[in-house]
Amino acid sequence: MRTILTLLLLLSPLKAVAHSYTQKGVASYYSHYEDGRETAEGQRYSPYRYTAASKTIKLGTTIKVVNLRNGRSVYLLVNDRGPYVGRRILDVSWIAARRLGMLRNGTTQVYIYDIKKYAKARRVHEDTRLRQHKWLEKHRRHDGRFSPT
Image (tube, rainbow, N blue to C red; front, top):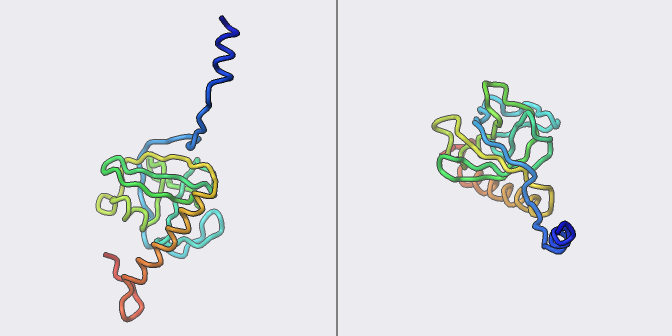
């Protein structure tokens, strides 16, 4: 009986797991006052980049964040440490908070998927940068300032 079970396990097709872990909790977002501050990775924080801060997720990891209240999702790059307020598990940039629909409340319940690093995640970030550039050009006023709407 044991040999039959072993053979079945060896011959059965194994599914590749796309997510190595998941996490559920409260997320908040960085304010514009943090603009230009150096992150843990040494980059300058910009509210218009799809980035996040986490105390537990490895820096440089691409994550998928899903807002549990409305189902919206976004891919983010973890490049900073934090949040250091209460039981929050994630801080997201302003543009990510806007896309997740959490600007009014400031915090929301989220589900985090840790996406393994592969070419698709890199393409997602390139597409995100392109969308970000188009959004900035669309909202640039005649005097060079931005009008976030």
